[in-house]
Length: 540
Ligand code: NDP
Image 1 (cartoon, rainbow, N blue to C red):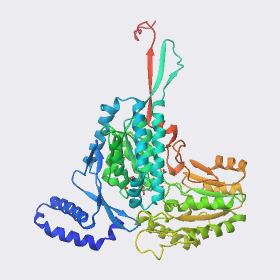
Image 2 (cartoon, helix red, strand yellow; image 1 turned 180 degrees about the vertical axis):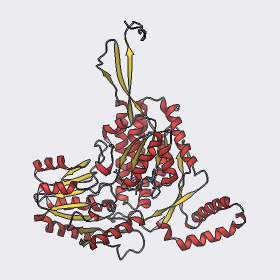
Image 3 (cartoon, helix red, strand yellow; image 1 turned 180 degrees about the horizontal axis):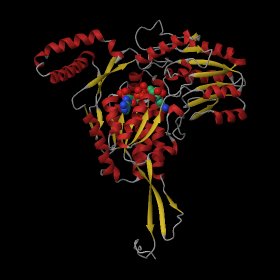
Image 4 (cartoon, rainbow, N blue to C red; image 1 turned 90 degrees about the horizontal axis):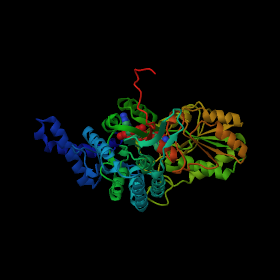
């Protein structure tokens, strides 16, 4: 990966040294490479005292079957801090088979929905207790502020409590059937093994929105962490262990898209795939699901409009916009990355916004005074630099930022950036950058801004600031987005469904709807007549 280039000299030295020491093995190339890889990892652990993590499969802590690992980088210093197991095809198969066994014949398949709810309640309680340590691991691994990851880990408990309560409220129905002497009813049943795949941002939050409803409905789960940040999710296995879930109910594996993600999403024993990530990977996932006919839900990216009318409370709207784009350094699927300002207030709004942006304190995500951390991968910085340069060539003006901070030598930081775009057709306006970069456009009328806001391939979220309630209702109806916030931004809740339109995916997470998505209906017909069935070949 790109990050490894940074360590080239050290890695090179290390590899040369180890290669010499195992040169006697060159008669068997495969074996030699395996030994080099494993010794390499041991060396890293010894020299750099890296943290090591294990996968959680069938209730046990396991390494990859061949001992392979990959390094996880702390983006605030740009250096490796942990070794993560690299799941092989067999490791993935083991996890899916364990989940299938737990679903089909294990203790989990026999307990009542109320007992399932008790497991989830305990999970929520323990998670809230461990929010500090889990939040810290997530912050080191992703660069997200500890203030936010700690709070998120605590709030996630609410998701498990919500689904704990719903576990024994999943009801069927009787049907007013149009046949005499027939009694027909529906029951909702769990689907089986759920493959839950998450990206690197908001790992624990995304885990909760997926496994909360999946477990409440009686499914079992295999979770796959992102290669860029797996640590907090693997650590979460300790909470699963402490709750005492029966073996195989929750399995957590780590590895790359291929073979780990691919094997998981094509596995014949997987019945549902819940995917969060980018549209390109989503297309692979959909194709993979053609192998097993698994049901799929997709939570994908966005380029969400944030619309401010001249009658809005400007201070509130400026604060909302700052939070919407620079919160989590812009690495949020719902980042309000397209700002539409009504012309009469645009200059005043931008003055206020740029002076707030200029005071944002970048730094160590573990410190309380830090307001913006680094980006999680070096690849994102390269993408952002290239798109900003294109935008400038196309006539955009940088109102603030636009560069890596000159006073920060290590770590993957980028300045909060505000780009004044003369034209909606600029590429930067509809490219998800997943970083702290805001595109600003101006509008005259309500009709015009609705058209501009909907002129995008995405449709995840939108924000509207206005004091005119009739207008806010008109706009919420007209916007093609799965979530619309009025005079607020980035609010989520276990009770409120979450998901997108268009290239932002399909299916909804959170809320009662998610329970329905993790179950399927079985229809039962009962003949209530005492008469025997007639012979179908003897017409009466
Ligand atoms: P990716 O799409 O690159 O990766 C998402 C996950 O899919 C990772 O675990 C990845 O593994 C895995 N994966 C990769 N290839 C395959 C495959 N062939 N089969 C199965 N799984 C595979 O997304 P990013 O990690 O870059 O995350 C950023 C994206 O996520 C953004 O577009 C963002 O908007 C979106 N997102 C959406 C949210 C929502 O709720 N709508 C919330 C948060 C983020 P690996 O990491 O090993 O490649």
